[in-house]
Every structure is written in C-alpha cells, then in structure tokens.
Length: 453
Ligand code: PLP
Image 1 (cartoon, rainbow, N blue to C red):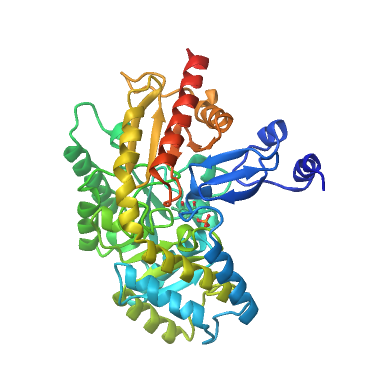
Image 2: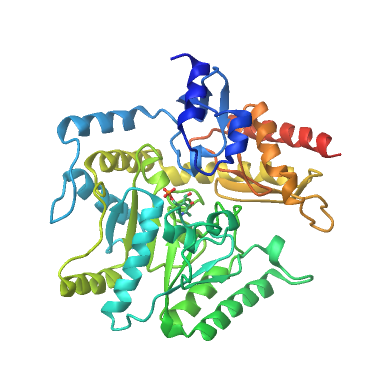
C-alpha cells in the first residue's frame, strides 16, 4: 500500500481516541512505522525524539530485542490461555512473584488485567468486596480529585476530574466525591505557605468525609504524581497527612501507579517517593514497557485475606478478563522486569534525574513558562499568558496544542495537557539525548513566543 494511501485509509476507517476529529481531518494522522531507542520514525521517514515514551510507558524505548524474543518464545510454547477456574501458567506465576517482590506489598497478591483502566476498575471492585467482607457493604463512595485521570472505562470516566473525560461519559449519580488537586502553583491562596496549603487540602478532605459520612466511603483513589491531569507533583507532607486521615476513618487508600510505577519517580513506585503505604495499587504501562497490553492490581495481605474469604462466602470471585494473566503478555512483562533489575533501573533514573531537573528548571525563565516542575524522569512546563499574575491563556487559544505542533516541527514528541507540556522520556534516555530533547523544546517555545508576541 502506498504511504499516502495509508493516511487516506486511516481517515476513512479509524476513529481515533483522545483526538479532535476535525483536527485529524485537517492535519492527517501521524503514522509511526519504526523505533530505535528513544527515537521513532514516521511513514515519511522523519525521525522524532519521543519525549513521552509513547503514552508514558515505553521505558525501554521502542525496539528492545529481548522483549521481541520473549514474546516469540512464549507464543511458540503456549500462545494463549486464561486464568479462570484455577488455570495458571508459568509466565504469570513468575511475573506475580517478581512484581510483588519489588513492590511495597511483598506478602500481598497480584490480580492481572489488560490495561490500566481495568486494573483501576478491579481495585474499586475489590475495595467494595473488602468492606462487604468486613460487614460494611454500605461503604461504596469513592473520593477522587479534580483533574484526576484513572482510565477510560465508564468507571474511569466517572472517577475522572477532567471535563473532557466526564462530559458525556461519567455515570450519573456516581457516588464519587471530588477533592482539590494538590497543585500549589494553581491552587494555593495568596501568601499561603506550602505547609499551610497541605493542611488546608487535608482539612478539606476531612470536611468532605464528615459531610458524606465516613461510613459511606469505601476508598480514596490518587495518583502519586497526577499525570494526565498535568503532571502535578504534590508538596511533601500531602500524602502522609492524607493517608493518616484516611486510615483513621477506615477509608482505603488506592494508589494509581499506572504512570508512576517502575522507576519513573526515582523509586520503584510513586507511593515510595511520596511517603505513603497504599492498601492497593494499580500498575500497567511500564510493567511491559508498553510492549504488551497488561495491567495488575496489587493488594496487601490484609486486604487479600478479607476479599478472598468474602469471595469464598459468595462462591467465586465474580470478576475477571479473558486475557488477564495471558502467557504472552506475562512473558514480556517478566522479561521487562528482569531487564529493569539487570540494568539497575533505579540507579539509571537517579543518575539522569538531576540533569532532567536542571533542563526543566532552565526553562522556568522562559517568557511563556509559568512553572517548571519535575521529579525523577517526569516533568512539565506550564505555559501562561502572564508570568507575574499566573494568568493562563484562554483555553480557546489552544496554546498547548500549538506548542506540541511546533515541537513536532523540531523533531520532538511531547504532549499537552491543557497548557501543561508533559515530558516523560524513556528511562533509557542518555545525557546527550536529554540535551537534544530540551534544545528542541526550547526552540519550539521560542517559535511560540514569536507567534504570541
Ligand atoms: N490510570 C492512570 C493514572 C493513567 O494515566 C492511565 C492511562 O493513561 C490509566 C489509569 C488507564 O490506563 P489504560 O489506558 O492502560 O487503560
């Protein structure tokens, strides 16, 4: 098939997720055909430095041969099987063991899924089952946060604090309660210290709990760093105080580690970077470096004991996906974890993080940048119309989206979340590649500054 006819067929046949259909028609699809380390190449032969690891997931870049071999070997042995009705396979067993061993709940259990959304849905269902097993089935409500993103199922949309996700899609009367996002830059009151900001946010959650009644609330779900919400890095103290409050009230704390998991923030999991112990965690994305669709819910031994007893009382754990624990996805994820351990992933991230932070901080002085923030190898620059007053651009101006187009012109893929420009390179990125990434980003910012002047 001719290349231009591929684009034509795409327009004729595909409905693209998280895409403005009119913009797709105007600009056409960006068709990626190959990858090499942190670079990807499109169908016209143009190469881009992938500053977003695809969707926050390709930690090992785009053509790791060991993962190709792991998939091929497993397909040639046992190409598919399920894990319902006591069925299991060696790959998923070994994967579960390794995953738990590096998690903060080593004596817990793992329940597999095919995506982050499914892992999140599973976590909420298990929270309900847990409370039911403890004789409190009326604990059903969930606390989420404004700007939260927890996946794209109906439940994910209902948990989301993003208008585009909720709009037409949130379930009516959902029982989801929203707390403020811990973004000091946009949410702090004039003159408020970071510590006072944290205390105010935690007091607001306490007030929400009091208003709803603690006995009606099952859990609070939170990402350690809010990714799709704009790469919001909470002030230190936020999670420890929040966790203490929730524990007092018998409300489970669910850490959505779909982006933060597997070294992204400098520890294996974001909850470790931000100092809290969740009752359950959802993981996906970098679990297989994005090479296979896989997610998992990890639960502590205490939660597991209650939910398994309750499932037995009911006769079965009435939950599961055909491809959960799939031997091929599991084999690829297992190989991914082996590579992470062999390359000493945490040492690699910690070695690159200071340069990453320096590069981000250097952009903080740019006339369009209101705030630059980073932890580990994830960060963002927030574009504002007026740095002194922190006034944002009008959303119709589409400034963030324009920057992304200008970055593409420079050979760089980044993502705009509103006017926050997210940067989340593969964890194998070298110092020289970081330099190139930020040079290209600065050039795109300079071009945007000329346009908006
Ligand atoms: N949770 C978080 C924090 C995410 O960022 C995402 C996806 O970006 C999801 C859940 C959903 O994962 P998936 O797209 O694999 O369903």
